[in-house]
Image 1 (cartoon, rainbow, N blue to C red):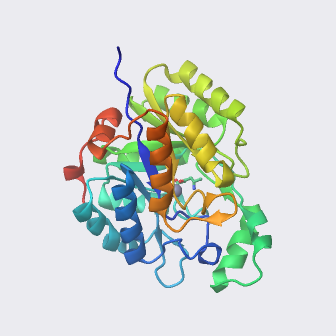
Image 2: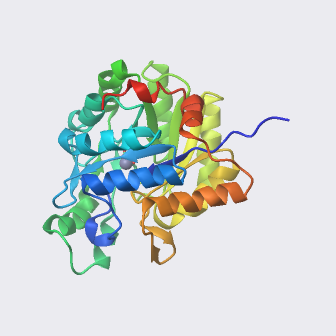
Image 3: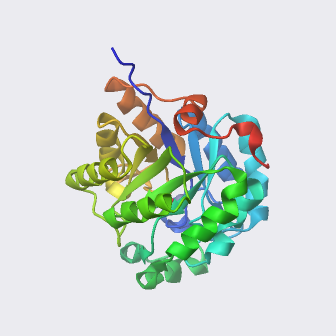
Length: 310
Ligand code: KMH
Ligand code: ZN
């Protein structure tokens, strides 16, 4: 009888979509980011997907000094795999967005596999008062966002980071992104086993229906055969249902306040760890096992936690 592969839980701690007004639980100081990341790891997350924020007003930050405070604290307190975003702040250039990964040489970093509309402007209508001045324009103005990762940008990120032997979390928001990834593999930018994050429910990307998950998975099977591992991120209300479905289809899962502020419909989560604990319990109740960080390292062929620069 074949042994069932354990399920890797990634937790995306804070991101660049939600703003402090939307939830008191959203961490933005270095202390809060470190504390919530450590708690998420204790709750079962083996990968921590990290963005930084300006500690004064919670705005998205790619400043290396903002990462420099929480990264060593997380490393000292956990064995979790650190994954640094190159999506960072949605409107910055690829050069600025790869700087944190290029500086700290983590085991993993994210990489969006295409350019797209990337909007969350409907959220602006839900709030009349905002904690910080930047928030309203940032959220309402996202109807003008193009998240840019051209083939040239992707090549630049891959080549800049190649000396670090970092495994990418290839963020695929639509089926065309899988073909972009296949093209990039064919020209030698990425080596198997690759790790694909199927993303559903971002305005500008594919919708959060199970049919779409099956379609993405079938397309990836056709393009990559056995040479890939996959995980699912459902934005907003799709988070737990799609993660649960993915876990039953042989996939891995991503949760965290970056992707949804809620623990169930209408109820804000009190922390990242609460979401991790919930999906961990679901996965185990349904008969699967949650991967440890070292199991995640083996499944994804990572370089090891002793080969980072923080
Ligand atoms: N915010 C997520 C939908 C990145 O950091 O590179 C995708 C993401 C992008 O995590
Ligand atoms: Zn992210």
